[in-house]
Amino acid sequence: MLEGLAARLFTIGGTAAQKAELRRACEIAVRAYEDGNAVKIIEAKNEFYDILFKGAGSKTLFDMIGALHARIWRWRVLGLAHPGRSPQRSMQSVRNLRNLVSAIENGKTYVAERNARDEVTRAEAEATRLVALGECAGRRTPPGR
Image 1 (tube, one colour):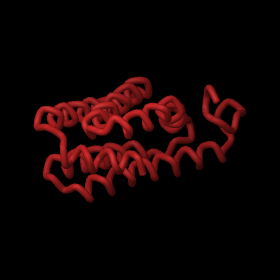
Image 2 (tube, rainbow, N blue to C red; image 1 turned 180 degrees about the vertical axis):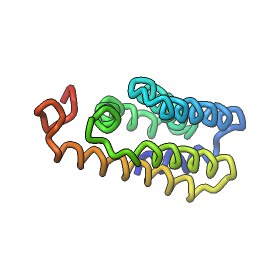
Image 3 (cartoon, one colour; image 1 turned 90 degrees about the vertical axis):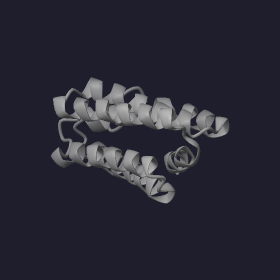
Image 4 (cartoon, rainbow, N blue to C red; image 1 turned 30 degrees about the horizontal axis):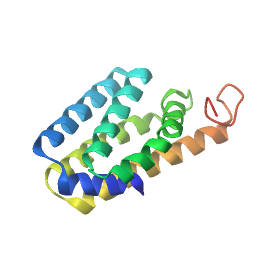
């Protein structure tokens, strides 16, 4: 819900410079996915979402998401680095990020919100599936938890 709200607020109030910065961050994330480097993907996605959350222009929302951010990246690590990761998931993420940026750039507020929520929902489903596999070094929770 929070990512969707951030996307909606960013679409409404983000400046042209912020939108260009988000586009650049998206393309860096896409290149990281293409390289298949999980560390670079995590760094790029963290940067992408930091730009999105800051650009939403809501200190309350930024603070709420910031409080959850440490947990979110742990799940992102699990989803990206797990040997059982779905091969389609990376392509799905790239498509979702690009669709999100496009919706924001074109002022499609509710499409942007839906795209952000969809990406989070798909990432959650993949992380849940991977935890259920029990292949994460014998643990059933993400690292650091």
